[in-house]
Length: 356
Image (cartoon, rainbow, N blue to C red):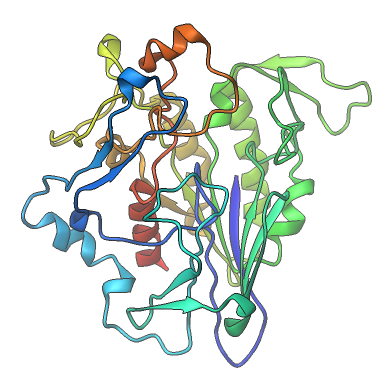
């Protein structure tokens, strides 16, 4: 999956930012340590006996933790960066609480440390497309999210119709996507989750008779990373900043359950979740190491695993109708992969802004 930001050449040095995974087009930053108790009614699909309000609690952080995180937050900074702006807008496709739903899109002027609002007539967004684009006209800035879950060309590149029984990739081609990467000033890449859904079939560019060879997810991901790395190696590093964000793994507590009903973070120094995929992490390290200074790595894997309480669990919209046996046992369908917003992705963003 790729995210980028672009600028048109002008007397202002304009920056625009693309957020990750898993996540959303953009998010509004917040300081998690200041979250107060907020109650929200559960969605209609939750069985009556489970219909208890969600309670967002203030994390029990060490006394210095909030200050340590706050120093990364450009929105809390008083440092001046003349003429530069970065904008965030809520993704209208996200399921949001009443507190999050706003009539206007907020913007943090991260270079002066102030919040403001982008007027409706000064912004535009084209959602539900292969390339989702958010424009802030006043600052001549463009934020784009490119749907490319496997990095290389594949039969899963449709942003809507990608729920397929069989994944087919062109492991040696990024042509469909790279044309969108070429003109970006800053690129943020990540790929992982879609490689966990079973084997993939390979359709090499030189073949005329379709897919034939099948390979496991890790092998397919390594081929895709190699094709991506070839493109990065040829990119003009003087005109681009390129980041790769490491995997965000599903949280599971062995045989004792999953993220359902979890309400507090893990409080254990040096914690690594059982779902950490070390072979994949080592493979990514090998590929990126060959690129040297062309790519900066944003390693969010371990820091995210502490937040077993940060997943939507059963409180989200599901694509498929839940069966009665699932409804009777919420742990069987809890979503422990995606993240709630506001939440953990905001911390990823603050760390990224620090490197920008």
